[in-house]
Length: 239
Image (cartoon, rainbow, N blue to C red; front, side, top):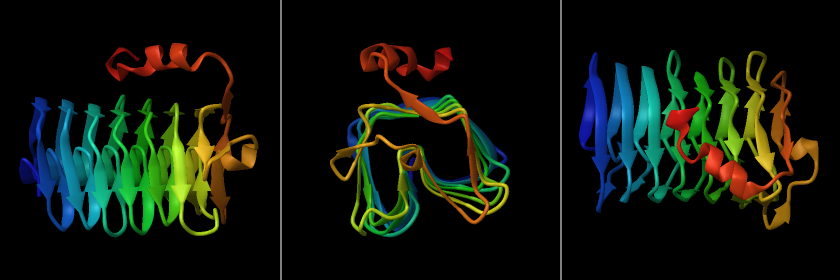
């Protein structure tokens, strides 16, 4: 469900959406419900609220073998089940999300909830989240779950209030769950304005929750001016 319910072998670019609501079940996004073998470039969801069940994203519900670049979401995203993300609900294999920014709150009632993607087993780079993220488990500022072939590189969690409803397990400032050999989080940072369940992140273990072979490299905190950082990443197209 979306402006385009499903696309394949297509190119979508330069679309700006405002004032509305998208309501559906599986694979919901303001722009596209499900996309495969396509390119999506320079699109913005300014104020179209998205509500669905699973695979729910601010722009796209699920993408498979898609190059997504320069996407921005400023609206609320709500998922009643799994895989809820600020840009994409499920970033599936052979896909890339790059130079994209989420500024809308993301709420998932169950698991895999993230500022950029709820569930990632592809590539995410040069992206930022500056919004509240909440879910039951596997909740992260950039990705809820990063599994198997998932790679996250050069991403920033700017000012997050991350809330989980299951005794603070499987939650992280960047990734709530980084699972299996091959899953990597690299060169990414959170700011000292990131909180988990109301408490500031002040331990490296809170940046990424690694499990069963998942790794993170060169991930850290940023203790400079958050305003300066916001100014620098507010338009990822300039990165």
